[in-house]
Picture 1 (cartoon, helix red, strand yellow):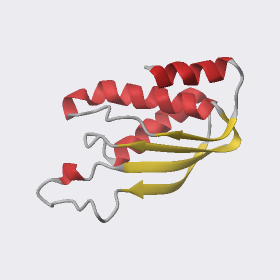
Picture 2: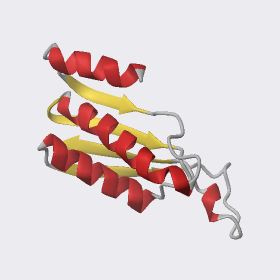
Picture 3: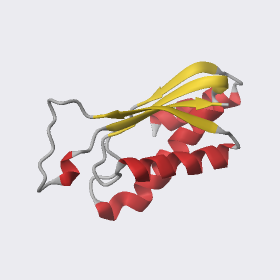
Length: 119
């Protein structure tokens, strides 16, 4: 997709940034799409990590209900491993109070994000 092409171009051009913000569309509309979505999230975040200066911040988000926060964190760990980077999770973001979650529909808790320092 276009953002991956642009991120690769930045990488090829030697660009580096203090902060990268990644807020992609829903990659996993269902659990059945999770394998493909995990690869897409991993590749996107790997590229984001590679563009950061040492100590840079990656703010990354997901609105896919099929990827819960723990799954999203695992995908980011794989991205860091593939990028050859050590990372620290500084903050976890959850959907705001005006997006309540029904106990009968835990998939309603779909907004999540992480602020990560790339060492």
